[in-house]
Amino acid sequence: MVDYLQKTKDLLFEFAPSVITALLILIIGLFLIKLVLNSTKKVMKKRNVDVTLQKFSLNLVSWILKILLFITVISKLGIATTSFAAIIAAAGLAIGLALQGSLGNFAGGVLIMIFKPFKIGDLIEAQGEMGVVKEIEIFTTKLTGLSNKEIIIPNGSLSNGNIVNYSTEGTRRVDLVIGVSYDADIKKTKEILMDVVTSHPKVLQDPAPLVAVLALADSSVNFAVRPWCNSEDYWTVYFDITEKAKLALDEAGIEIPYPHRVVVTK
Picture 1 (tube, rainbow, N blue to C red):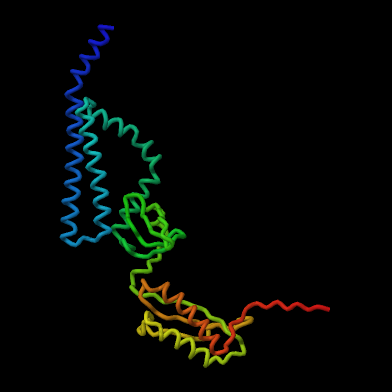
Picture 2 (tube, rainbow, N blue to C red):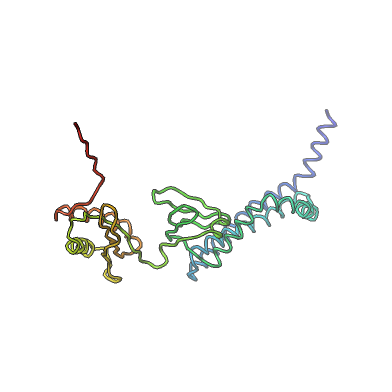
């Protein structure tokens, strides 16, 4: 027991300086990394670097500095960095195969930064999801869905798929189809629908809105109602025009067809 305690004591005295030094390096290193990231962020803001590029770059720099700090810490603990590098090299193939999805996502993030199909704050539709871009990270992109849910899409899939950006042009066309009875006066119907569209305060006059006969359907004459608005006003215009068109047509006595069921009794 005495020999065991003595050996333990000797080991503690032998390794204590290395452990303490490693802890100090870790604490000071994390502090310096935070300082570097904050300074870099201030410089980027001062030079008006795009917000999307700021966050992606800071995320990437943070990972690189932390990996370097980790290697430094383990070297102070007595683990030879050359041996450590050899282990990583030997396991490189296995790691590459296991993380090929992650590497693909990283490459996708780099491609997004280079080609910039969207930026933070844009409303996009991709991979069957629609939302406002909240953050572009190294491996994933986060969207805030229209119902305020968080959507996380891998950058690999995002960069290789179709992306619809609704914010790039600044304006959007609202496409509505409104059907009326074949008995309705087409000219009068067009005038009513155009009045509804042009009287809305958020509808743009340039490009000019369009109201036209779209199709002669089985049970209705369908009108294409296509006002333009600013991108952020899309849903307001969509819902308002739909409601006001129904009320205006009802007031004018113009019927909007709907399925009827006739029950015949004998």
